[in-house]
Image 1 (cartoon, helix red, strand yellow):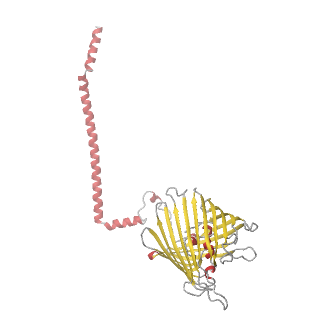
Image 2: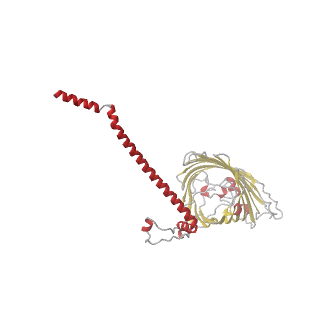
Image 3: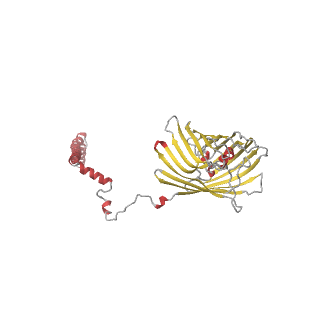
Length: 459
């Protein structure tokens, strides 16, 4: 009865769960799964086949169109490059907007010159005369620069100079600034004004007008760009307080040679306008300069230049190249890669030789006084010890060009802080020793600043 029914049900369940029974049921299920996978792969293969066929058909059609009508294809490409192709997408939506035309000529603002102002003011304490004016707005320089066309450019520099605080190696030498009427002092002058043609064939460039001559690199610098408050002592004695700037023509040639460096030459013909060198002479003067630059290593550069200036002095015997001034100038720059923002050392120095002209015959009864050659030398050093801080020193010595037995020397340390590219603050303490006098000393606090695109250029 009751127990027999339960026994029969248990036997049936054991037979259903036996391995043979499970395998018999799994085989039809596995076969169905494989069939479905094969069907899926076949469908993907058919799809890839259709894609390949479409690509081949498109390639054949493009080749046929290229062979049949290449002119049409070129016209379409040109129209697309010119912006005249058919509008698509968002362009079709904007086709009703008015077309805007843009002129390529220079605007009126672009025709205006670049205008800059550079100013140099300082206060000082002088042990020689503590009662004199101790605050001097020494110079305000206005510069106007413009590119006239792709081949030429023009530059004008007009400066107002307030006398005071000059370093005078010897008394009575010409070349200083005069006092204006009214006791206020100061004068306006055109320091430079010239037009220059650049990029001429053969590496040439030409300059016409009044310009700072290439009598060494330092002579090209304007006062506000100098490392110290004045030019070198030999420059002050032989040329004057300002740069050697005369009116005439200049020819520059970048020598096309490659022997480990860069070589340049200048030849300049100018009016003899420097009173200290030529007096009131109406004869032209001639200047030649050769400059070489070598990169000795990744961190070390050497720049070397030699100059010669030749003319006639108004009070001398008019002979070819009677008044001669020679200059040698060199610069060593150390700037370590990767640390140039924080470390740099520059040593600059030079020597000058003045070979004066034979004087004219004196009146009867007076002896002829022949001036001897006069020498001078100088050295400047500057070291950057932080991103905006420099410290430096100068030492200079020169003979008197009118009496070579008289000498003078100048020494002084300096500390400079560049607040920015446009503002520089500097402290300088100078010691000046003239022949037969005690050492003169002065403390100088100087501020130079620039307004506009052109700052304190040193080139």
